[in-house]
Image (cartoon, rainbow, N blue to C red; front, side, top):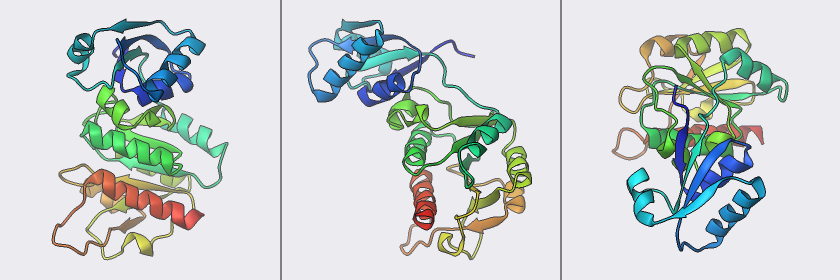
Length: 244
């Protein structure tokens, strides 16, 4: 396992610091101004984090020009095991909402989904150990630091997570076009978990077979599918709407 994770982007680093993540060092762009940059400087001073001002060329080399003026080295993001996650979530809510990602491999989609999950109150995101997008700098930046706020869980097989959740009275809902039901036909009010599939093949057929319910988004145009992060947002906000 890697000893540190490199993250970049002003908001992502601020969120990491405010979440109590161990930040080893932060490189800041010389001469950069702005309210968000000043906020980061203030947080760094209050947390007594080691930082240094460097030329923009160094930041460009570290991040391929994608940094917003700040790069940090942090300890790897924590992953829970599923029993630990379920126990932690059950202690704070009687109607948990979980999100399962079946081999979603694009880091920017992953980051966007984490950001939406945090905004919609998802209690935990479960991914598979093999074939899933890593939590790297791009993921963290795209999530706007939400990766430090939503518990992440890694399992050997998504199917095992489905069986565990079902045995714990969690309804599992698969987002798939292979059904006549739309998401508006499904109840998200009880404890539930939503499964989103990979960008190319969707949800594994063996997992679709064991889901409690299946639902799709109604598509009124000629394009046959949505980006997975957009589709995930639609499902999560329907869950929010029903639970308000």
